[in-house]
Length: 138
Image (cartoon, rainbow, N blue to C red):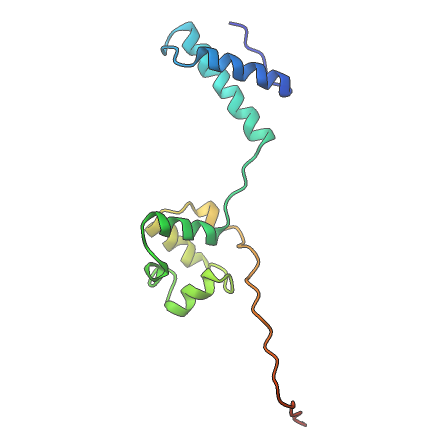
């Protein structure tokens, strides 16, 4: 067993081929130990060179609700009243610390996902008045 650090893509490719060859090796054998070490090295290389961004907090909430077969009404009482729920889900209002705690506790969404800023708020169409504007004088 000759294990070396993964320094570049060719090392990574060679390591992945060796992992495939060793896949299914019984634990506590020389092949099983080599497999465990190589998997650990490959995971470290992946984390460093191909990081995965955390999902958007609102998208994470939507996903969890979908998993549980629920809709926004399930958030009433967790986030607040109906209007507050819709403001948060439209991204017009950020999550407060109290909301984050309750979402983490009740829906088991990781807090690290919820504490990051949500995406940009949805743009509302500009309403233009059709009549004349009346200017108030002070």
